[in-house]
Image 1 (tube, helix red, strand yellow):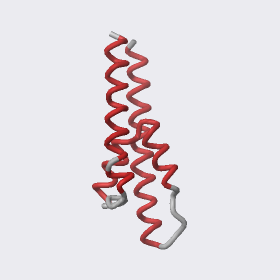
Image 2 (tube, rainbow, N blue to C red):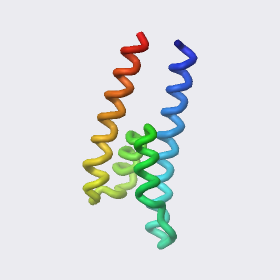
Image 3 (cartoon, one colour):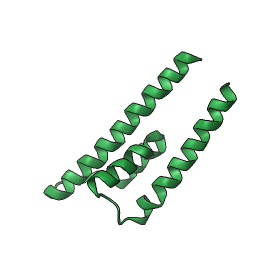
Image 4 (cartoon, one colour):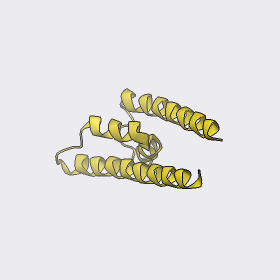
Length: 93
């Protein structure tokens, strides 16, 4: 059971780091007038487990904070991911 938890923790770390860096890159692209990262890609990273990373980047870089889809959607995604993860961990015990 412990190796599975280690892999899960590593996966969550990597996906959240990736989501955070995607948001950072999008903010930098916006400032420089370059081609932006599609919102669908940011939501995909969030749905794959990176919603805390996206929310942290939103606050850190003040990016997408006026978009209701992000300010409401990300906490909802995070809530459901946390619920699923908690249920899976409880079931595994």
